[in-house]
Every structure is written in structure tokens, then in C-alpha cells.
Image (cartoon, rainbow over all chains, first blue to last red; front, side, top):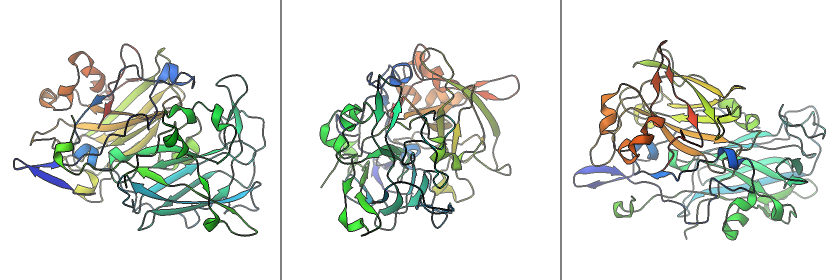
Length: 246
Length: 180
């Protein structure tokens, strides 16, 4: 792990990770998203200084990934139904530095809007050629690429006639315990976004819109797959010890 | 150019699909040196109902107080543990040593924990400390927690030698969460 540290009064102090700017992250309680009401903590988190516990983190570099783990369309007898898409992007920190060799885990429903999960009661068909699970590692410059099909929208019981916009779940670790991130990637021009309480839990519109992938001709394959670009930014480090809070 | 970090979103109800490949009940091999402990607990919501779809992730130092990348590859120090239908999670591990804090202070032995679930738009960042541990009194992070709430972070020793640690996400016994 990174050994970035500075000496203060002859004591080596780890440099912590910057707190996200206001309004760029959701709050725990967002009552439009009904599940937060009984589950969100009611007390604000306590700010603690970064220690070695927070600036170290698990490394999955030695965990083997199957060669086609990043291709959610591969490994079945036939092809999954749906629009073939290639999703590519970079994982960077707040200063624009690439986050290399970091694990990305993704999961999604099929083109009909059904997850391969016992808890999914949506009466849409399962696809025998699609599980909706993928994993990749970023390369030396933080780039990744996934091949999949576009997930469908699906109903949920949050409110009357509630439908989730199409999305892919992304889970990342980054270099430290403090950089852990689970998010969702959405698709451009989806009319359901305006009505989705999960997407709209992020107060700052520009921060919200960064969860929406963009159409990417560079990663489109003519006659085969549409490309989307989704870049992910993980927390960056303080540059000097005087920036540390509290 | 500086950009804010990507926004967090809930893990949703179907995370098992993508995250279960790293599920484990053991954080270190049986051969690992140190005091082996068995941890068991419930996760409850604000109405006291067990949460069957919570996911916990643990990150800890080894018995010498060194994290994976400091200690070498033998001890990964990471575990991903779901709750079961009764809201129960279980983990076998070794008690970590003391890890340095700031200004030369040593921290008390602790597990670093994230809690994820449907209904949490951000994970809960918390810590589990060990019972009957005199150095808890000098831990710099516990010292930032109001005394009345500290017990939410400290496991209890059960008769069978199992450590019990329940997590209430909301309410009177709400777990202390942190931002680091």
C-alpha cells in the first residue's frame, strides 16, 4: 500500500483522504427512498483523523480473475438477449491520477429487468445465457473495459408505479479503506432518472449527472456493440498535514 | 484538475449476485499466530427488526498490529460477510495487535468495518473493539466518541467464549459511525 507519510514533530503521520465537497454525496436519510427511513442512522458520523487503519486497505492483485470475467456475455451456450454494450472508462483519484490494478465488481439485471436473485419477484423472464456478474481490474493507467448487455428498467415497491432506471452496480476498493466506493452507472437520456429517488439522493446536479455514462463512439464496435464511457473518481489524498481535519 | 469523488449509491437488495464470490467466515487461516476469536452478531434496523440483507466488510491488522501490505501476503486481513435470514453474521479471526494512531499514540485492537445494505446510500464506517481490554481507555478514536455511545463499538464476551457484537443502524442503541 502507499507509504505516503510526512514527519510532524518527529512522528510519522499518514496523509488522510479528503472529505468529499458538500452536496456531492447522498445523506443517509433521504425519505423519498423509503428504505432509508428505518435503516439510516439518525446521528451524524463522528469525524476521526486518518490512521494506518484508514490509509491501508485490502489488495486483490493476487486474486485470480477468469480471462473473460469482464465479459458478461461470454461463457454461456448462447448469446444473452438485449443490446450488446461495451462499457469503458478510467478510475482516477480527485487529482486526476490513475488508480491502477484495482478491483471492480459489477452486477446487473438482464435486458428484461430481472436479476438472477431469489429475492427478485419481478415477473419478467430470466435469460439462460446471462447471470449479470462481472469483475475486472484496472490496468496500469486506471483503464477498464466491460462487455455486457444493456440492463432493463424494473419496477420496485418504493412508491406507486415506481421504476428504477436502467443501471449497473459498481463496487471499487481503490488503494485504501477510505477509498471504498459502491455506486451505480446509469444511461444517458433515460426518462426514469428524473423520478428515481436513489439517483436523486445526490443533491448536486452535476455530481448526479456524473453517474450517467456517455455514448462513446471510440468504444463502439460497428455492426456489433454500442460503447459507453463511465469514469469513476475515488477520494484523493491531502497534500500536506496542515490540511488534516479534525 | 480536481474533481469530486463519484457519488455513492446503495448496494441495493441484489448485491449477493455480484459480491458473494468473496464471502467468507474466516479472516485468517487456522495456522495464523495470535489469539483466535469467534465473532457473532445481529444487525437490526431502527424498529429493532433483524436485517437479513446486510453486508459487512472487515479490515484488520494481524496479531502484530501490521496490515496486509505491511505484513506480507500471508494475512489478507479482509473479510466480506453477509447476514443470514435472521440478521446474524459470524466471523472467525485473530485478535489484531495495536496499530499506530496519530502523534505516536497506539490505538487499541480493533476491526475496521463497513456496513452496506438496501436503504444505506452510503456505507456505515465503524469499528469493533474488544471487551476487557484496558488499552481501550487510551484509544484516540474511542476518545472522540461520547462516553454513553462507546459501548456500541465494544463487543461482549459470551459464556461460550464467543464475542458478540450487535449493530443497530438507528435508534437508542444506534452504532457510532465515523467519517475518516
